[in-house]
Length: 102
Image (cartoon, rainbow, N blue to C red; front, side, top):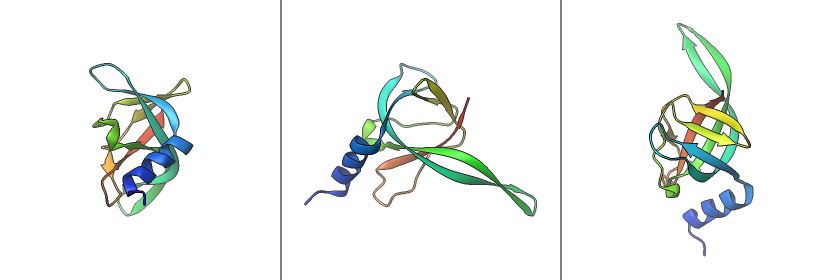
């Protein structure tokens, strides 16, 4: 039986996109990411505004600790990580990166 980590790796291998992770210091690193669309909610007083965002998932096994203001390059397009990366899965295997195209 496959472990959950092996299943995650298989999903990234099958459906992931090749990307370069560009830290603020150091060299770019080749990674695989999964795109996922979603809306971010911006609170303005008692009003919430939905902002179309592009999220990417990045495996923690890639040995990267992403940070806000770093970048991903995918097919020649650059995406800025615009919020603190977070982990949402119970096993803590995948970073979720909230990005915008620049």
